Image 1: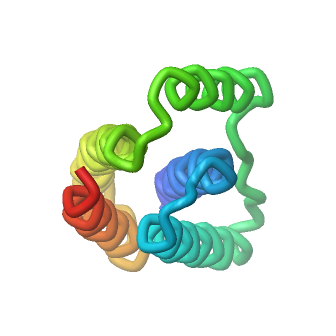
Image 2: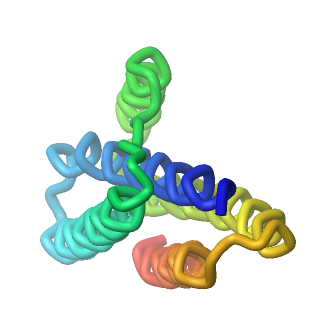
Length: 144
C-alpha cells in the first residue's frame, strides 16, 4: 500500500508535464485539425491528473508538480524547437517523442509496482495512461 502514492504521484507528474507541453504549443498552432487533436490530448491528460488526485486524496497525499526550474527548461526547449521549425509535422514529432518517453517510464513504473502489492486501481490507471499515450502517438503520425 505504501507504493501506491508513489505511483499515483508519478502518473500525476507525467500527465502534468504533457499538459504543460501542449499548453505551450497551442498558441503556435494554426492548423485547426492539429489544434483539435492537441485539445483532445490535453483534455485526456487533465482527466488522468484528476483521477490520480482523486485516488491520492483518501491516502492523505497531495500530488506535486515538477519543480519550476524543470518546467522552465521544458518551456524554453519547446520555444527553441518551434522557433527553428514551427511546422505541424515537427510539433507532432516532438509530441510523439514525449509520449514515447512517457510510455517507457510509465511501463517501468507499473512493472516495478506490480510486484510491490500496489492496488489494482492504481496499476490500472498507469496501464490506461500507457494506452492513452500509444493512441496519442498514432494520432500524431497522421500529422507527420
